Image (tube, rainbow, N blue to C red; front, side, top):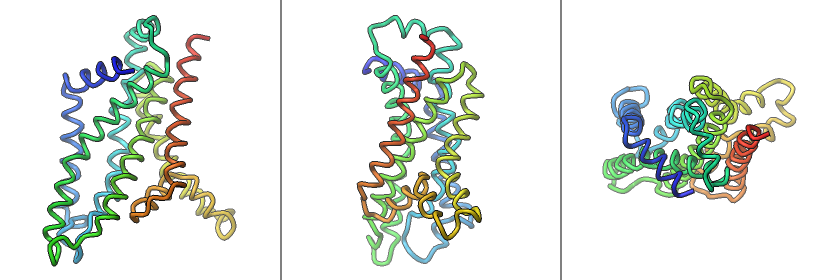
Length: 243
């Protein structure tokens, strides 16, 4: 797994892809949080980073599939997937190597946003008047959300040798698992009966639960279950090629 992880990280940062992803994420977040008046933190009367955690899932919805679309699709298109299959590496090692490489890039993207927390904390009255527990829980939730999107992305990439198809399908699945169940719960057939249960099937409900600063094991189990599901489906997809 380590060899695949290093190969993927080198592949990301030896080209412009990694730097462009990090730069684009920080540029969009900076514009939304500090420039555009509808979302600007400076227009709020209290110290909060909630806008960051509201906007980040929308950016990740497109950014993470763009990162992961090449993970297996490019290998299949170029024929190097057969070379990987002949090496003394299990499918799980290949999958987790690519998964953690994608997650590392997301972590590098999020790391500079800690400066926003420091800035908002100092802008508070008095300085430091910010709910650190909620911010910490939101970062955990955002990182787990990113892990779900990465798992979905590499699964989508394993289904095809076309990177554009992998990107579109990944965006679709990420949208369904994040917002889809909320929209479904608003249908008249569910309202007043099982709408809460349907909402809990989606990622959004658990993401905002963590953003309140309370780390609930049920939310963690949900996130790890979805991640595990798509990693398992990726392994099935790779095994299908051998069949």
